[in-house]
Length: 256
Image 1 (cartoon, rainbow, N blue to C red):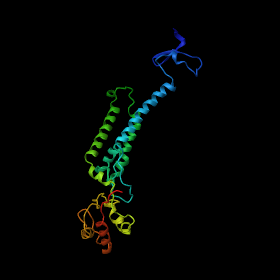
Image 2: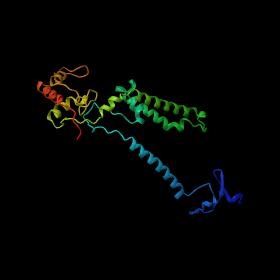
Image 3: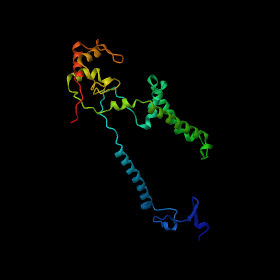
Image 4: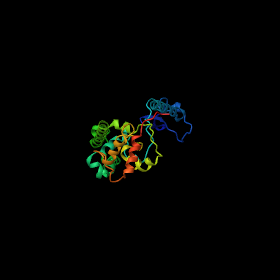
């Protein structure tokens, strides 16, 4: 067994020292301590990746993403919901001093402070200890961040109107004629911002399944209601009549 100058330390192991690099190293000299990148190490990596990929594919087949109706840029009543990993940011924008006139605080300043703290973490805590109890600054920042993300995500899920969320994206087959001049010139301009691009509901109720007469619709359009403005001063009687007839004749149809 060689001793002294013929050996060098690699980690806590001693291996034979070579004066010149060997491109084709004989790894049998170091049994159980290393392996060839090709094919041993790379094959293990591929097999691990394949297991996760197959599991992910099985999950997508068993629980496919929900399919909603075609996106409509004119439908301002549609309220999009971000994926679960952004729900905490979505919830922050609901708070008083992070929404409305304070949107910049919730959308830019607060996330900016959080990401800046993450980038500056190595300089904020220069302690060389590895145990989390001996690194109070880094541990406190991490616990605070995880706690805030968990709480705001939970609050967003607990208080979100999931029934309305499911209804506003449903695919509905109806006799709505998007090429009708009444829809293009009157309904799209005055109704879709609240009732949805296909009148299936948004911030206002859906109008497809409602069994309303022309007179009933005309009264709502003319006089408004608790949550609906009156159009008596902005539309003529003929336009109100055209809208009322269009809405009253809407109905669900069977999918072909």
